[in-house]
Image (cartoon, rainbow, N blue to C red; front, side, top):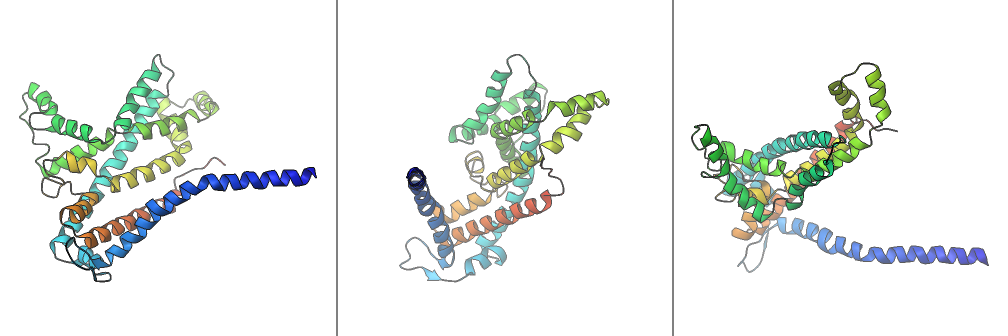
Length: 305
């Protein structure tokens, strides 16, 4: 009798767990999976606002943006090149800055809690509209950066009107939001066994050698996680290149990331077929990049089994 009651309680608790999962499952289906499938359906049509009916073109939209010589094709390939440059700029930059700050904040110093909070605040603010506008003011022709350079007699630099520097400014905005990555690194650093450092010190290893031979190998799983997280976020960046330049994606196409291209095709030109095809290409690129990172991770990631 007691065994039957215990089994009944287990069944009830399991059913309760599934019951609580229903809202999450519905959310995934309605707000994730359905739009995902719908975007692929739209990518197979020429669909514009004002047209009576969409025209089925198969993979014509994909062919146009990947190989076509139309404006959509040229701009998409330009945005693809800019996006790759942005990813290769921001991911290493954020990783290095976040790891360096986390390493410093890992020391037991007076008031270290305040500094940990202060360095995390930019991550909370993120790339919000107000921060993007502030960034434009800081890097503008009459901004704080040029004012500081003027103290040393350096002429103002058109940071946001030159294609060569505009993408760097946008990348610095992403690097400024290193707080979340820093906290993840800080947690990993605090879990490195102190006995390893003690043994290395006895053998005469200096701090910098301990960092590269003990700390870095042990936290490589965390580095892998942060690389993938930063890469996915960089491919989907929108606020910075949309709000900081004078024109979204400008000057020219120097900050025209994929999300800006998709936004312009869909909501400025009403060309939903091209926008949906571009979004699917972005998804495939992220998947390929993630799989490649995982494939080669076994050569440099060490798991403490």
